[in-house]
Amino acid sequence: MIDFGILAALLLAALLLFTLAKSFVIVPQSENYVVERLGRYSRTLKAGVHILVPFVESVRQKVSVIERQLSNLNQDAITTDNVVIQCVIAVFFRVQYPERTVYRIKNIEGAVSTTVAGIVRSEIGRIDLDAVQSNRAALNSAIKDQLADATADWGITVTRAEVLDVNLDAGTREAMMQQLNAERARRASVTQAEGLKRSIELKADATLYEAKKVAEARRITAEADAFATATVAKAISEHGTEALEFEIRKRQVETMAKLGKGENSRLIMLPTELADAFGDAAKLFKKG
Image (tube, rainbow, N blue to C red; front, side, top):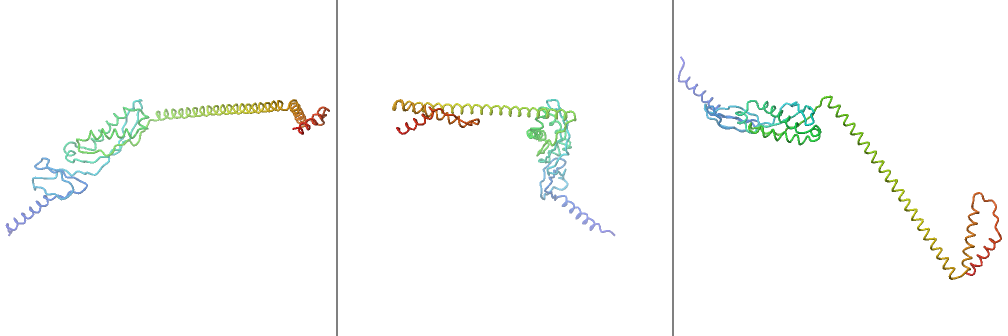
């Protein structure tokens, strides 16, 4: 025969254990628990041990607070210069307010993906293809800022939004390649023209330098001739005709010396006056 007293005690003990089990909740570090009281939001439990009111409070949803990444999004967009491109976008976010994520949005990842698509189309539609290629950092920053504003009510924080790649159709790539080749040819022509210009400038500088040096040499020669003339004139004024005769004889000797050095010179006939000139020059040296 069953003892109803013992059975009742066992049932009461089981109910007590079940109640205690429901009263204590251990929340792991990577999650937050959203708790409801009689069907309404009560509080959000962080990591650690918590006590719930049995049969009154219950865990509505366990929300991961680890940073997560959406699957890479492929989004078509049109730039201001009417180029159709396909962007590959990566988005990372973290749930900061789990209660908002639970009660304000049903599919958080799908909502973020849809929002990213609209923002990317809008931002790329404001710039041309060159800006998309060269100023990727500014584009990423603009997408992240707009995405953060749009998702603030969903209780998430966008930690990163980046355009990973930009793909073009074959026709656009061919046109860009032709433009690139034309730009390279233009730069080569400019470089060649600048080199030719520099060469002409250097030649002109060299010609000017040579002319200056020739003029300077002529000036020095003229000054030397003037000095020699002045010296002769002074000698004439001091010594009379003897100095003049000496200068004439010296010039005659120098002239004959030059003639003797010629390649075709074999025999030189000296006039008797020139021999007398040597004697007279010697006498003048002795007088001096």
